[in-house]
Length: 316
Image 1 (cartoon, rainbow, N blue to C red):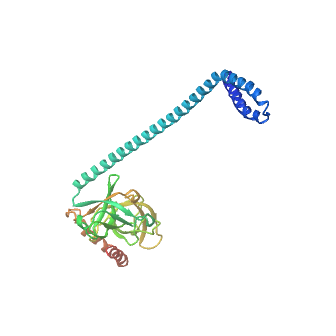
Image 2: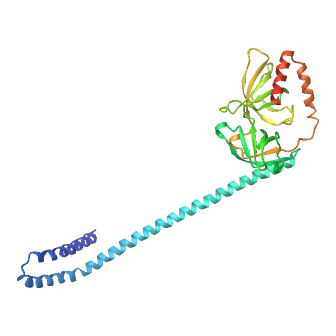
Image 3: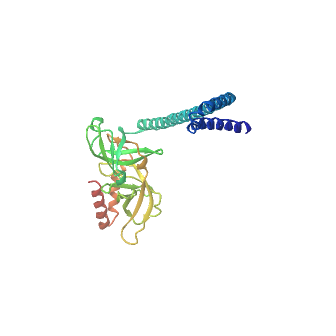
C-alpha cells in the first residue's frame, strides 16, 4: 500500500513541475528571467535526477499493467476458444447420436420391408401444412419410383404399422398424400374385439381424432378398442391398424353409436412412410371379408341400408 502511494506522489510531483515550468516564465520580466532561469533549471535538473528512479518505477508499473492486461485478454481468448471447442465437440456428439438413431430406424425399416408380404416403396416426408393438421403430406417419391394413384400409405412407429392415407396425386418425382385426418377421407373399419364393421372419417382441421360412425348400439366397453381397416373396397387392404378408441358417444336412441379414435401414427413426428405398390397375396384371413356381407342380413332393412350407404360413401 505504501509503495503504491509513493508512486502516486512521485508521479504527481513530476506533473506539477512540468505544469509550473512554462507558467513561471509568463510572469517573469526579461531582466529577471536570466538569473531565475539558471536557478530554476538547476533545481529542475536536480528534481529530474532524483525522480529518475521513480520514473523507472512508473515505467515498470505501466509495463506490468500492460502485461497483466494483455495476459487477461489472452486468457479470455483461450477460454473463448475452449468454449467453442466444447460446443463443436457437443455438436459432433449430437450428430453422432442422431446418426445412430437414424441408422437404427433405417435398420428397422429394412428389416420390416423383408417381413412384409407385399412390395413397398419407402419415401421421406418433405412437406406438410401444420395449420391444416397434416391433412396433406408431400413425399419425395413419384411415378418414377413406381408410385401410383390411390395406393395406400403406411408408416412404422413404436413397433407398430399404422395407416397414414393414400396417394392423392403425383408427378415424376413427388407425390401428395391425403391423410386419414382429412374430412373427405372415409374408411371402412373393423372393431377388432367384436369383429364389427363401422365407418371412420376425419373431422375438422382443429381435431386430430377420427370419428367412427355406424357402430352397433349393442356393443359395450369400446374404450381403447383397436380399429383396423376392414378390407372392404379396393383402397385399403384388410387389417391395417388405424388407432384406438379414446371416447365413446353413447346414443340413447337409434340403431348406432359413435366413437372417436386416436391414430396410432403421430403425424407431428412423421418422417418416413412406405407406399404399397402391390397388393398382399390373398390369405385365409382375407377370405373372411366375404363373410362380412352376411352381417348385413342380420340387421333390419333400415339399418342395413344406412350401413351400406356409409360403406358406399367411404369407397368413393
